Amino acid sequence: MSLGDAEIVIIGGGAVGLGVAYELARAGKKDMLVIEREYDLGRATTSQGAGLAGQVRSSVERTRLAMHSVATFSELEKDPDARPEWHPVGSLRIAETPERVEEFTRLEATAARAGLEATRIGREEASRLWPAMDFTRARAIIWCPTDGYMNPTSVVKCYEHQCRKMGVRFAVSTALEGIIVRDGRVEGLETSRGTVRCRYAVNAAGAHAYHVAKLVGLELPIVPVRHEYFVTVRLDGIHPGLPCFRIPDAGLYGRPSGDGLLLGGWEPTSLRKDPRGYSLGSAPPPVEPDKPILDGFERSFRPFFPKAEGAEYRRVGKGWPTFTPDGRFILGESSVVKGFVMAGGCNAHGISGSAGIGKLLVESLLDPKPSSYVKSLGPDRFASGWDWETTSRKAQEVYERYYAIESC
Image 1 (cartoon, rainbow, N blue to C red):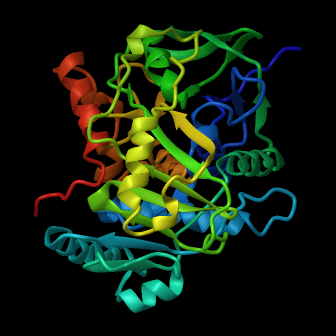
Image 2 (image 1 turned 120 degrees about the horizontal axis):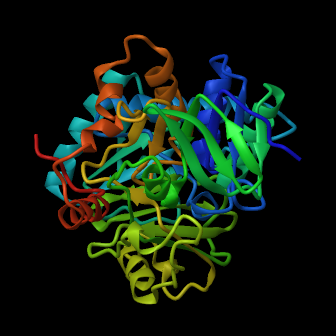
């Protein structure tokens, strides 16, 4: 069966692609088709997401982006037919060093400017919120009551449900094979199910975003970096209503997963892949669980939660989220190839930030005067002047320094 034509085709059926589709449809763009090469939506990077949604960020723009996503999850949770499984349990951010305490002061000020409730609490209050955790080492704690966690796959299905109601079409088991460009403008796509004419092609292809951009002659520094976490079997003291937590001095984050613990972290010496080493038609290299790394997360968490020691893993989450050398999204239309629109390089903020990313993309395409922040995210900033070795190393460092304290 022919796919039919569309004004906008979104390439990639993960959380970012669906978040973009949802926000564009809400803005009135209903003539839209989402294509996904897997047999179902949300099967690639999205399926390996940890599901935390934190709003405390180092800039007002990023904070408001996260706030929009959280507000969207909260609203979508009201639909009984398809929910994102949003748990508004709040979050605790724990400082262990004086330098981190100073950073917390700056983060609180940024949250206040963005209109986000994020307040300092003491150890006693933190213990009331997470009774089984030991806060002895905490020098400061930020409590954000509107943070939470969701099910990444359910987020995708929820977006799909809402998009279908607004007329968006979906095509799974549909591989992209080429992009038709004439006179410097996108005219359509070649797929495994035939040609689709379109005005805009939105690249939300995750770990394959580099390859999709190459189809129109653009080389963009979108670097896959390995990320892992584990989920334990049942542990005493864990239940689904506990807050999420982040311990940036230890490079850790976590949340309840049923009656087990989900614990992940940012590796100080990570592993990146050169996207030029695999093709659009093949999967990224498989990620084998790195037990020494996972054990390191566990050891770092023991002072806060001794019951984590030796806990049996129920599941290991692993994948290739993509990072950029400046730690910012690549978002918006190319001036070199009109109609080619990027929604990639999400720096591990794709699922939790999906609705906010979609909102920014709407602004970039439909607002005649987009903000300077939105304009700064465009793909044109990488038109020239970079090389793969230097740039991929910088992207890897963005991962490794995810919780680094920024200078004033």
